[in-house]
Image: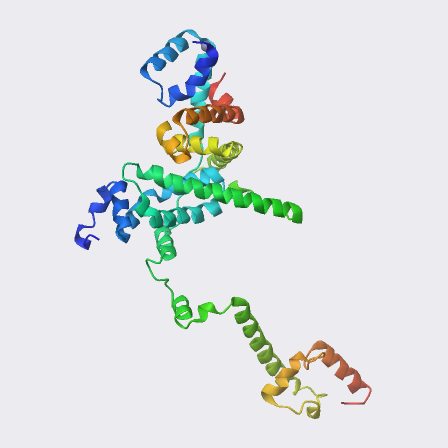
Length: 163
Length: 205
Ligand SMILES: [Zn+2]
């Protein structure tokens, strides 16, 4: 066999995929051909080097996650199960986030308003609504308690025109 | 499903027998199959895709599809060949959709995804210098693998890391055994060139 043919057969030879006859032919050629023998060695070494590729391991709980996906085991965790049991799972998360944000802003404004009242220049008449209603002023162009509001009121206080 | 007292039966049971049980809805048999093959499936995906983060999701998806398709398993064939075929098809689909996304990114001028090999996890080694060298070597091998065309890459991975025969690889890829042979000849030739630095170091030619 020619060197070219042998070179092509080397891969299958090393993988043990040649017939007995082909195997003998390759071995006979290798015994007498330095160039093909060298290629045989290089190819074997390449194969060996490939073994240095790192093996990774599955993260713990791999099967559990697969079985959750299939629905073999229920989702664990109090919040997760309550969420689904209450039927809130269908509620889109942006809606939920907006509601939480609005509640947060109202509460913040409510607390902020009660602080403003302690300031010396604060005119209670400017904010006749008490409690929750006054917190809705957070949506005003200049919300009470904001930096702009305080600045405006400080200016008018200095000028002697308290609002 | 076997009772809890006889649960040891599964560990010695061939996968082909277990998958027949899975087809009947036996989740314990499925658990044994997953535990038995999770590492090989995960690594097949990781070596093929070169991306640690995607590998676990795809491995889970592979088992999910295996569960669904258990009834279609033909008991003349080998379980791993069947499982790897599911796995390889999923990987190829993932590559296709990633390619589509890449095109979109190209048109949107978005930055490319991070380099896949960055997250390679290595076994603990006492010497940090050795660890660094091993990591570098592993990364270069992973990079070399990624340069191979998909069919050559799968054939090589299945041969080198999973020890499949040409016949078995041909069943996974849906081609002839002689086609597998030529895929491997070309793959090995390319890798020999790509990994020449290591060859010279160890061979002394
Ligand atoms: Zn020769």
